[in-house]
Image: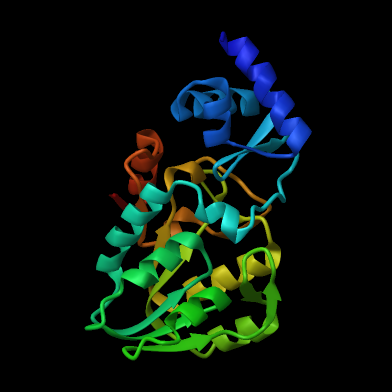
Length: 253
């Protein structure tokens, strides 16, 4: 199948279903995921689709946000490698802030029993997963629970973060670009992410390569605000170099 034929098929699928994943498109069109990613980049340049985490949505769907279950099934190997690398940023003892997300969930599952920590999180799922850990004191932020991400948001969460200060904040992001920095579709969740970063001595962003070049509705920080970016080896190396030029340490797992 020639590229123009693939382009038409991709646009038809994205428009008809409201979303299409890279893996599904690659399987249906019998090409590699890398080919689909290049096709999506070209189609986005033409204004025909919009790239999002793990796939594409119709152009103009800036606010689209997949559910936790959907995100958990995408780029599993990459997320596992990022989580293992992020473990090096977790202190032996102390306090960490961890926001809602599938990669941060993997990180928490890797923390060994020898580390004695206080974990502040706005994720209901994270809090439940940690509730049986004797070595971890779990502090769940209050507030409204967003069904799509199972994260608490709004003033109750923001107010609690004003009174704490942690060794490190581990934050996920839906989008990461040189022009707009760190972005996510939902404004209240963006406000909590920003407050989490403000309440930590060290800021660490966990983001697989599919987040690179993505811009979403609400910004919660600039790339120069963070200390460490942990991504995977498929990340765009030109973007990695640009981020490192800002003084950010980039770890590729």
